[in-house]
Image 1 (spheres, helix red, strand yellow):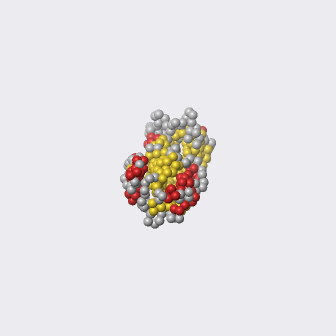
Image 2 (cartoon, helix red, strand yellow; image 1 turned 180 degrees about the vertical axis):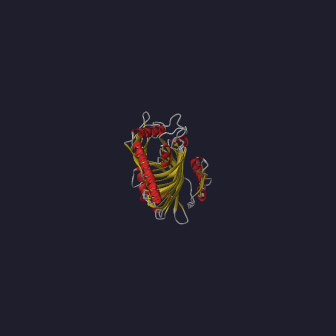
Image 3 (cartoon, rainbow, N blue to C red; image 1 turned 90 degrees about the vertical axis):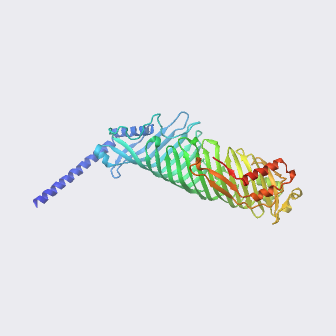
Amino acid sequence: MNRLRLTLMIIAMVLCGVALFVCLVLYRMQSHVEGPEFRRSLEKLALTSTGIPVAFEKVRLDINDPSIVVTDWKASHQMPNSRPAEFSSDTMTLIFRWKPYFLSSRIELSRFEAKGSTLTITRVPGGPFLLPILLQEEPPSRWRRKDPTQKPPLDIGLRSFQIEGGTMSAVDDNGFTLLDLKNANVEGRIAEDDWDNFTASGKATVQEVRVAERLTFEKVKCENVEYRRGDLTVGSFEGGLARGKVSGSLSQSVRDPQAGFDYRMTLQRVDTSTLIEQLWGKSGVISGKTDMESVWTGSALRPERLNANVSVKLSNGQILEAPVCRAFSQYLRIQSLAQPDFEHLGLEVAIASGRISVLNLTLKSGLVQAVGTGSLDFAWNCEGVVTVALSPDLLPQLPASVQAEVNKRSDGFGLLTFTITGSLMAPAIKLSPIKAGDLPAPTGPTIETAPRGEPHGSLRRFKWGCDNELQALSAASPQSGGAVASQVAGRRSLYSCGFETCV
C-alpha cells in the first residue's frame, strides 16, 4: 500500500514537473514572440524574403493553433515615376510546429493564413508590372538559411497557404484598373520555395472579377491553378457572365507580360445586350442569347501581336442598332431591314497581324437570310462580300433597278450579292455584278486544336463547308471585273482551303 502511494506521488510530481516545464516554456515563448527581439527577427525575415521593408501593428502568440498572429501587415514597393505596389493584411497567421522549438528554441513557420488582405499590382511606365517584392541582383538561393549550422530564432519552410476575403487589383501607369478581384478565397501548397524557381499550386474562388473596368464575371471558380517560375496557369475556370455561363483556361507570364498569354474561353447562353453594354458601354445594339468558342494568344503589352480564333452564335434576337443594316435598309428601301429579327446569327472571326478576318457570317430569319465574308482593321475600315436572300413578301418593295438584278431561288427567295467598303460605322453598299445561285445552308466549322506542346496551344485550322456557295458565286458573268474576281477567289481560299495560322 505504501509502495502504491509512493508510486502515485512520484507520478503526480513528474506530471506537475512536466506541466510546470510546459508553462515555463509557453511563458518564455510568449515573452519571446511578443518581445522586441522577435519583432526585429520577423522584420528581418520579411526584408530578406521580399527585398522590401514591412510594417505591422502587433504580434501575439496563439497557443491553440499553434500560431503567431500578426495584425495590420503592410508592405509597399515603388520604382521611379511609378505608382506603389502594395500588400496589406488585417490578420496574418503564421502557423508553426512545436517540435523544432522544444529541441532548439527555433520557430519554424510551415503555413500562413491571411484574412482581409489587399494586393495592388502596378506597372512601371514602358516596362513590366511591379509587385510588392524586390528581387535583388543576387537573391538568396533559398528563403531558408544557407548555413545548416546556423540556428536563427525564426525560420521559414512554408508548405501551404490560405487567403480568405482577399482583394487584388492590377493598375497600369495611367491609373487605369486592368483587373480587379473582390472577395477571393485561395488555398494551395508550395512545392519549391527557391525564389528563382518558386512553384505553388492550388485552387481559388472569387466572388467578382472585373476586367478593364467593364467586363464583370461573377462567382468564378478556378481549379488546377499553378504558378511556376513566373508563369501563371489556370487549368480550368467557370463562373457567371451577363446572366449566362463562362468557362475556359488561361496561362500568363507574370514576370514578363511580353512573353505572351493563352486564353481559351467558352460562353453559354449569355445575354447579348448585357454583354455589349459591359464591353462598349452602349445598350440597345443586339438582343438575344450568345454562345461562343474562342482562343486568344498574344502579348499583354503588344496589342499588335494579338491572335484569336472566335466562333460566335446568337439565337432568337434582333439587331437594333447596326450601321450596316441601316445602309442595306436605305439602299433596298425596305424599312424592316434596319432592325431585322433573326433566329440565328453566326460569326466566325480570325485576328492576326493587326487585322480582323470575317471568315463566315450567316444570318437566318423568316424574311431575310445572308452569308458573307470580309475583313476589318482596328480602325474599323472594312471590305467584304455579302449574299442576301429576301423573302417573296419583300421583293415587291425593291426599287425597279434592283429587282432587275434579283435571281430567284427555288423557294421563291430573291438573291442579291453586295460589296461593302468604307468604315464599319459608315459603310458603303454596292450591288455586285456576281450572279449568285442558290444560297447554301452553312455547315459550320471544323476546328483542329494544336497540342499543348506547340506555342500557346493555338488553333491550327478553321474549315468552313460552303463550297456550294462558291460554285454559285463563281458563275459570274465575264464582265464581272477583276475586283469581283479577286473577291470570289478570296472567298474560295477562305471557304474551301481553310484558314491556317501558327500563332
